[in-house]
Length: 83
Image (tube, rainbow, N blue to C red; front, top):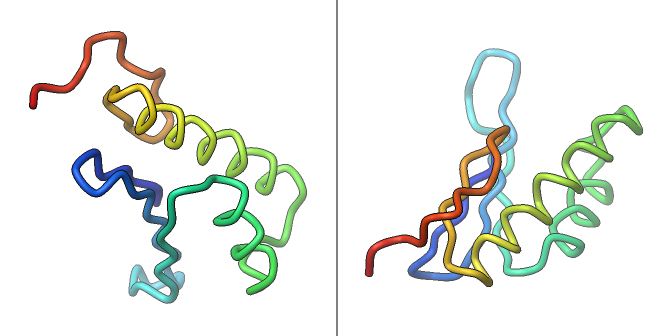
């Protein structure tokens, strides 16, 4: 699960066990660094999933930079967040 906190300007990735219990929590500001952390911790087993995660993480990073709403698996919202 990928979320973006506009106040902290931070991306969070929660990796869950199959029983829906959180296994890893990775936070950062840069999509590339987060993806590398996921790969280094062997949390990605398929290249297609790595590609998907890279695209979603970059989208979350872009949303934070442009002050847009980020929601995983959705297009970035053109309307800016209320401050």
